[in-house]
Image 1 (spheres, rainbow, N blue to C red):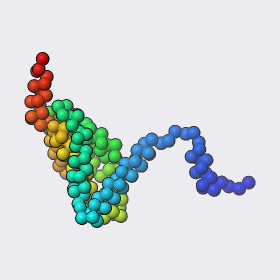
Image 2 (image 1 turned 60 degrees about the vertical axis):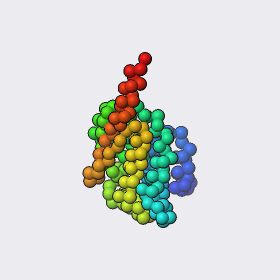
Image 3 (image 1 turned 135 degrees about the vertical axis):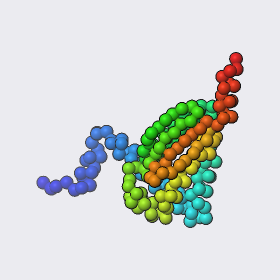
Image 4 (image 1 turned 30 degrees about the horizontal axis):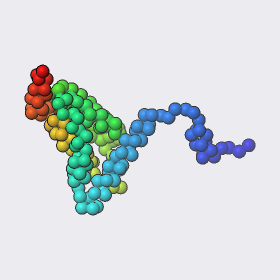
Length: 180
């Protein structure tokens, strides 16, 4: 009897009826997402545009999808923003949700990578970790469309996010509540 080859071992494992490792799949999806974003930024640069140009183009197309958050407050806006970032591998910390002002901190390097691993992942695309910060700026115009402002402040390897309800939105929501 011969030993199974590595391919036969893999095929046998793939046909077993064990459930997939969903956490590993989420990690892989986050990794793939960042590879594609880095590739898009590198492609844009090679074609005369910057990562910020690409993000502005994306934000223009995504902004209408955030209109449904108008009048819902800073908490709803920050919550959606954090769901988007967490689902792509950014660790979220210190979340404080309030209708008028909400805050959180996120790690600026995703997927639990260290700075060296992050640089090596981006290197084939001639993209730097600083270039990847453009990704966070996509949320500024989206928050504005939702009736809020977003402030981003970098602190070493983390980012502080503050979302404030636009005062005009707050007044508008109050007027709608007071109507019979």
